[in-house]
Image (cartoon, rainbow, N blue to C red; front, side, top):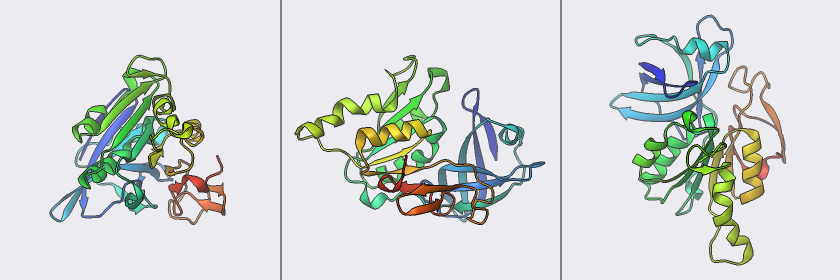
Length: 248
């Protein structure tokens, strides 16, 4: 196990565990010592090594539970539920899928990008941050030979603005009769970003939702959201949904 900072508030934890197969977009629930409720954390990467798996989790320090996670030392044994939820569907990615992530919505896109690249897809990635000091995993996506574009709200790195500012100019040509076609997209990030993605690119894609969770496996109903087909639980029906289902 290793556990260290990527930025001032974002940390990466690597865990050794018995071999488990993960789909991009799935998550785990970690029991943090001294806290009653488990913490749901998206899976950034999962590598098979013989009969074991090396799991990479990236989390942001936003409260007491995640603050306590930063103090976990190598050798610590964790009580964890995994894998949980439904992941992204790679079968309908097309040849040039577009991955859009904002802040701590970026980690689950890494395993997705790695698997899409293994299928020979030309993966385009847009990563959004508030400022350059908060940027992480840009080089890791580039190492996968993805076409990476970075945006920052303050313009300190990459394109100034938001993720949709980076994609709108190129892909909106499709709506004006150009030969450019809208890609199938996969997105994860804060709600305003997801709403903007749908307004810009339509509903031909999949979105991973973030909600507060209690149990993580559908019993408490605490993470329910309203969709076109009625109430759905983010933990078991999601966290990945077809964009057309969502009422954002």
